Image (cartoon, rainbow, N blue to C red; front, side):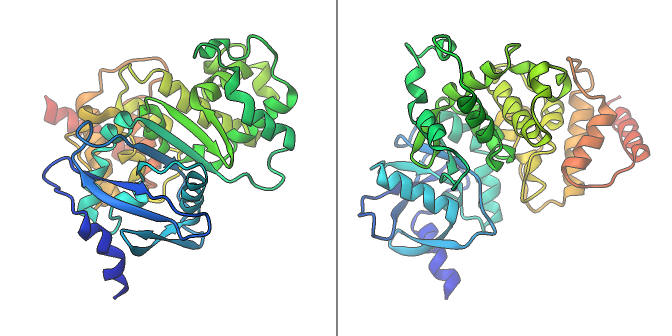
Length: 370
């Protein structure tokens, strides 16, 4: 009986898996004391659908669930998602959203396979991407830090990010606030890689505070005079970098790596290069460390496909075969050798594969190509 109740909204808004259809969820007006109400509908993929906002947030699988009404039926969502919906309700942002935990029937593997392949279209065509970092935790940010976050977007002049801090120096509190935001576990998630990189426009929400992503990026760049590249993991030998502790360095590395990709999203990115940068990102399902790249790489890796029925070892074989056959000749700065790609790919999928096995696989692929 329970399963039927919770599947009902998906039956009311069925998807055509032979086309590029997807669902949108509308947050409906209601008083702050009411249970949150949403309505789920199916639509053709963008641009043949209503304007919508795509949500990027961190799932919380271990937290208690909260109940909302979806198409009039009780529906359980994680607490982080509930706090986002509640915050949007308090701001009267009653509009269409794309939220993976609601818009995709997560228990239907065929539907998940289909929808993951639409991520590029969804996040690149959304009118905006909302980045939800959650509610402000007690003692995590000072009053001065909160005031800074509330005012920071006013620093922009004529929408030119490079003017952001030219008129004044970043104070110690402001600097520490930005570094603290970089420590949020959100930035370590695998799925946010494509969600943030593909966004045309994005806004960061943390409790009652908002900050445009372009503002955040401008400040991050200002933390290090040598620009964002100087804080990348492979060139850490800067004076500023040495001032951060290990935890801060990890957070800054994830954020800087992500923003660097966002700035360069119009340039070609190889699967080989993306694996190098994303293998350590957090994912509940190890296969997402690969599938989470496809939105950015898109047509280039369409032959691999998305299949959540496949075991990690067979996904390793498919992906590494693709690299061996299509990206052997790629030579760019900081690029891994083909052997290293095999090792990093195994690391991403949490597999133990020997160097000898990787070498044998490479030779086999060479023979096939020849």
